[in-house]
Structures are given as structure tokens and as C-alpha cells.
Length: 500
Image (cartoon, rainbow, N blue to C red; front, side, top):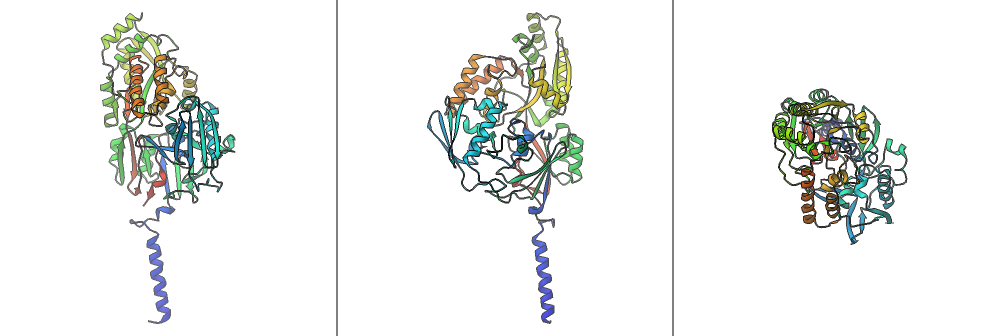
């Protein structure tokens, strides 16, 4: 063999080896150069996670690019951008920040960014602000130390901060910044097209383990059938929140892996106690006893839902196990008569279009149950924007929706929604306020758990709402997707996911 022939053969072997190195086990391109496509149940209305801090689709999208001081692991706060924290006195928290972190544009991450982000969130007075109502001042003590001062002990602060995403402190007050927010996370936001998609790319300057795929696309596909078809046709890699009536089809697809898990998600039907007749507990209890919860929930949700035993799901720290209201139509009629409504009542119930799994079917089943005891309920299914507007304005009789306990701590739901100061549904119980204040202040987990059990019981006995079902998470991924996990909070971390 001539020297030229040997050189050509070496070159050929090298080329083949390079080609193999760029392929996965199934011969596809290296996942590091791949695009991962996710079609969630709901698409983000905005990327301003401080304006919409409790909206799961906003959180899920933004958390790929922006990070928090803490994260929740096994029900407890754990380090993220903060490596540790301590309480030199009951009204002071000191957070020590991670060294060597930069934003995706190369700007150093400092305590000033934390200060600016938390202060803006509090100043907006949105749905998370009540969790931080005791915060009186935030000091950037030095570049890597943040000191938070409170008016009273605040044992829930590390948990609550798991939902406060940190942006660039000097820019977070500018609405334009949130069109394409810059963060410290494993992805950087490339573009946001409302009602279409969000495109994110790998942050090559990330301080931790870099994302396994180069590009992440979050797609707007409001129709369930369209999402399932896209998964079937290899146009989408990951789905979540698959409705129970679609599970059989999805789980049976070739080349698709299906899974379930616990969640913080549940349904409630609030009674607007600012309006008659909902200010009468007898009417509220009649509405509860008229419902066949076991039959409806079992029939509609199967393995993906269980009748609720608490105002928060059983996965949440602080949940207890209470007895669901008995299905007793005669008792419901009796309670209505005692409340001065022997001939029944006429009311309405609103819910958002595409607002959760089987939401319309559940509403119709409940309306049928209520009709049997003389309660005539007018259905009001609304476009999400209209529903949000009316919900915030308390322009409704009954409101059906999904909800989630974002931090996994009962304080997130109970203190934020049901105190007198919350003014969310016209409910006020000073005894409940006292118990929740004690729980928020305590640094003892066992004491907090005992207090939350008492709070759960008060809300249950006061019949503030129908709590029909605790939901399970579910998902489907194409079989070439590796490393996908759907955590209990329902917000996946796509940095760990690869495409084979």
C-alpha cells in the first residue's frame, strides 16, 4: 500500500469515527445539537413572572432562564442561587449567594439583583405579595450577601423565595425587559411570540451543568387533539396535563412513554360570600351535600384524581385528612329550607374555557346534582381573559378552577387566599387568621404542621368552598427523550433532558 493510499484510509476511518461520535445510540444527531419541543396544556400570557407569579405556564417557561434563591426538594427549601441562609435574630434572614454566577449576557450576578427583584415583586402587590407582607427592608449587604428584615418572625421565607425569580436588578422595573428577560439559568430566552411559541437556547456561560439540548421550544397548542396528533407525528417531544379521556390513546401510542405522579394541583369551587345567599353557611353546606363527589370524581378522573380530604392536596406540607361531605340530597333540601329557601335557589357558576382536565364535564355533573335538590345553576364558561377579569373583580356567584400550592407549603395557599386581609371570596375568620399567623412565624416544622391541621379543619367546617378533587400529574414523551421528570409542582426542568 502506498503512502498516499494509507493516508486516504486513515482519513476515511477518522471521518467515520467522527460521524459515529456525533450520533446517539440510535444513529440520530448528538442531543447536544438537538431541539426539544414541549406543548403544555396552557401557554404563557407573558414572560413577566413578577406580574404573573402564580401562573404555572409563566413559571414553567421563565424558570428555564431565570433562577430563584431556593428550590423545594423533598418538601424542604434547598440552595439554588443562595448557598445557605441563617437567622441571627427572629426578624432577620441573611442569605449567602453563590460565587461565580453570571447572567447569560455575561453580567455578574450580585445582591443588588436579588434586592431589585424582590422589591419589584412586593411593590406590584400581586398574588405572591401576601407571602412577603412581613418584609420591611432588603439590604444588599455586600455583593454576595442579602439581608432581609421583617416586622415579625417569618419562618416561611425560604420556601416563599422558591417562587421569586431573580432578574437583573437595574432592569426589572422596565416592562420592556420582560419581553426577553435575561437570567442566570441554563437557557437564554431567544424570542417570545404570543399565541405561537417561546424559543430558548442553551446558556453556554451557565454556572452549573449545561443544558443537554441546544434549543428548547415551548409551543402554543390549545387544542388537546392537536397536541396528541403532534406527539404522534413526531412534531412534539413532550406533553403534560393529558386529560383523563385521552390517556388511553396516548399511553397506547407506539414510540411514546407515559407516566404519572403526585401533584400540588386541585380543583375548587369558591362561594362568593359577598353575595347572598352564600353568606349563609346553611346554603353553602347544602351545596356540598347535594354533590355525589365519589361517583363524579371516580367516573371522570379514574386514577388521575381522588376526592379531596383537605383544602390543599395530600402532597403539600400541612395537609391533613378530613372526611369529605356526605352525599345527602335530603339533608341538602332541609338546609335550604332552614335558610329560607324551601323552593330552592337560582345562582350561576363560572369557569375558564380549557381550564383543566374534564372541567366542563365536572361542572355539568355538579349542576345536574344541584338541580335534583332545587338549586338551579346557570353555567358560565368564559374565555380565559374574560374569566380572569371577572374573577379578580369578584363578579361571580361560584367560581370553578384549578389551583396549585406553588411552594409545596400550606402557607402559600391558606395564608394567601383565606385570611381576612386577602379579600378573595368574602370570607373572614379571625381565629383562622391567628392560627395562620402563628404558623407563618414559627421556625418549628412540627408546630407549623399542627397549626395547619387546625386551619384546614376550620376552612372545612366553615364550608368556604367545594374541594372536589386532588389531581395527579401526568405526561407523555417520545421514547428518544431521556432524563425527563415531572416534579410534584408540575414545572419540569428541561436542562436535564436530552433527545437521542
